[in-house]
Length: 249
Image: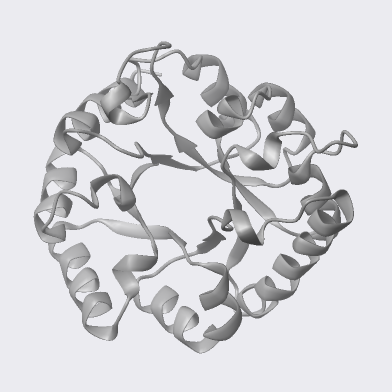
């Protein structure tokens, strides 16, 4: 299924209008992120808006601190919104390990953080950016070290960030096919273009070979494909263009 990371529309409130727009564009699901569950009222409003538009939220992002310190709250949110997968999306630069041992330990930390969610029946894993794919001075790739430390971590693969990290997404798909349970679908503009959108592009308007990549992801059984653009100047344009391109893949 094609869903939509609501972070893409964070600059285009209100959320209820965004969900209506997405349903009309042909999306069947959305993916949540931390700011949407900042308090109980927001969670209730989100749940009501999803019900009103017929959209589902199978996957959600939660910050590491919340995952570690507010387990009952995360479980309550995930249950109320009918999620099946929980992903930790990011670690701040100042909190990132600097060597292979540190990244293995970080993977072990994620493994421990995910235990109560897995025990409750949720899939649990990591969503990457580019820094995890950039080799350390000793040649270690942080993402690989992280997975060594967290042997049961799932992976929501953000393909465009893998590309921006200088790595080959097809090789990572082949090597980690047993981990990948969801994928972020976004595109990278040709060099020097879309600078006002941080160099990202609507799906089908950029340089990523999505036809080949999505076939590889489908081939390993991935079912959750999440459309994302980190900084669109027009979220409706991005949403409508991208789902049309995705359905043609």
